[in-house]
Length: 301
Length: 290
Image (cartoon, rainbow over all chains, first blue to last red):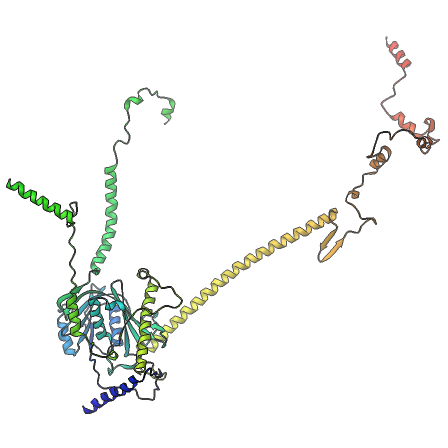
């Protein structure tokens, strides 16, 4: 115990003099012979349970596995039955010794929802996941160390509204790999970027190719459409409700409705045309034709 | 009376509501808008409750950035971004870029290594096999692009070649026509010089004096004689008067032909269709018939 304390003391005391010197520029590359400084103890103890319900598509499963590879502080769990109540997840997390949770919920074999939760006390948020691209897509050319710590890049808009601020804090705690996590690598070679566009959160993962800021996308990429934010984990009072959210069922319904409307409108148009058609187009005086003599040309007609 | 009062007051209520804008004219009752919960105070409390702000930045690693400035591009407007995949992705990329630039600078200040050494081997997020596939795909794409580019170029070249060929043909035809024309003109004598196959042929002047266009055409002999005899051009008046010279000229006289002996008389005899008899003879003939 005493030893460990010493180590931490060393690191902190080692930092201080360097701080005093201004603009210490270390060489960006370290020799591989030199043992990488590792701490056995880490402060920010986040453990994330990443798992899903039954009935998710293969794409969602791949996405989930990608997240597990990107997050060394994650833990896995078999798929949960759909019949089970959500608050059971709290107990599962407790059993797994996790304090954060990412739970994928598949519905109707096409819609994917994601729960992100801070486990015992909350808050938790539910998202609709759209536009999923997994890491195995060949157009995403980047690569990074498994378990290296990502920089977390947030849009400035995350500081504008309380619900965005809350989501930002939640993402920092869930997606950020704890410093000195034993499974992590001591180098920084990728960035998780969260951007707000169109009232949705767009997730991207980039590899840092060079120090000058050239990037290559690693994947996965997905879009989170927030639905609700709850005060406690997997339930509790609603703190925020997204007014722009349209459930996929409703969306599909409107699409179908539009299609159906097309036919109905055409029929209605026909009927109304009939109704509006005048019986007499022009008022003729029958006496006008009295003096008309019938000629040969009339017969020809 | 009481009843009437009630309905009257109701009407007034409605009129007031209409004036304020609570009700709109018509029978359609507007669907009441859903009340969306946005408990800002609660959200802020919750953030305070569970946030890990007490940790240093090195534990959190979060940065909020505007997209990095673009070099060589115009900054697109946000309204355009929503439907433009490329620009949207570019915005995300730039945001991450800004974070990287800022974050790496901070890390350097904290003297924390960021880049791994080249001989540092560890498990990667994507397997080597997968990366091989990625590279193959990239290569394939590049090759196909090159191929299509080449084909495009070839097509263009072929088009250009055809055009040039056509032009050449027209030019050759024109040259040939010109040459034939000039040869024809030369033969007709309208021009004196002819450039033919790098050789210049010049017309040899027939006379010592330079030939003029007018003298090229000579009248025939008969005309020449007539001209000589009767004159051509000049004053015709008084030209036929006898002069001392003309009277003395005996050039035309020939003893053989003189006094109707020569062939010249014969000519006269043959003239006309039968000679007319003299007057007395004609008279006698007349009387005989009577």
